[in-house]
Length: 427
Image (tube, rainbow, N blue to C red; front, side, top):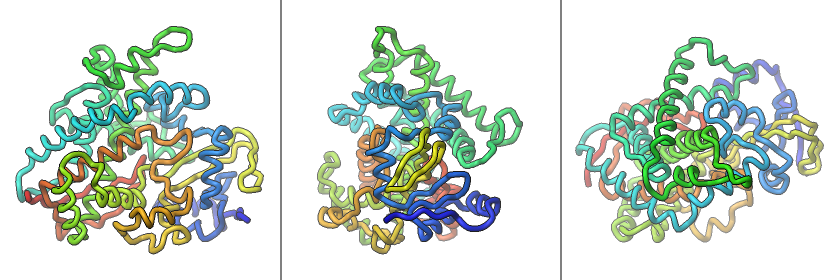
């Protein structure tokens, strides 16, 4: 039988503790109950079966609600923020861009852009690896989804713009009263400047769509059921969604992969051997795939999922009233000792074929699941694995002795706070 408990203590104090360190605060709630009420009918969910009901079997009974409203101020009502029939239509409309047969073409772009980046590095130099991964995945998403090539200075500016937008948007998600955009704070200033830059790019892409069989071409030629084309506003929303959500998560996962690899020389040795023996594609890179999945366990692409019930709902036999909101965190599930042995230890063998069969259903959800799961998850998995193997075969990253403490910063995905700096050595 599942349990529902209220979080003890003064609500304001609890909120301040949450704002100070969301990951630590939320982790401590898992020992209280399966549903922990934070206050005002807001619940943290710690039960795999409840995750299944909210995300899959009763998904139609939930909406993204206020979280979608906040994000829509930046990216409009695209596939990430739309609801109901509009979301279903948009998902069906964009799905062809992520079909399996498209991946081969995308992989060629990923390989080309990655090798170009490797060639620009000088042996022995210190790099902000997290920034390098961000610029790389941004170039890739622009080329694969929109047919757009960008220069290095432009990629730096766009990556910074995306980062500034994410900091503001993610911060507002957990504020009871978000700072209004018109107040001239430094964060708001950076946010507006970043948004203007991305809007200028989307308008340029719409007005001068590059030739090619890509998502933007698909959006430009798609018609609605009444025969009319998509509005400029909807096309802009889809572009912004892909720009902001389509590369930042993969870049962060790759940064965590390099961080974890640096402390495991024996694993790196085995991976290098695999990379040299499987140069074509990623299909036979078994250990690389396991390494990626274990990284996604500790640092999931979607560390938190937010849902609201527009009508009363029963979950695992418990009644929740209209307007109840639910915080589902793959990060918490993935580090729960009830579902993973030694959950805080990075174990590259955890996702071997044999061990993967023992996983608890709905305890491992790095991209969410159900009708609102990440539409580009397969693209992201292939992209991360190919980039990791191409770079890892060519260079070795060494952690700096005086590096600042590595901490996860929970924004849209888990970023390494203040960046990851490493010394690069050519193999």
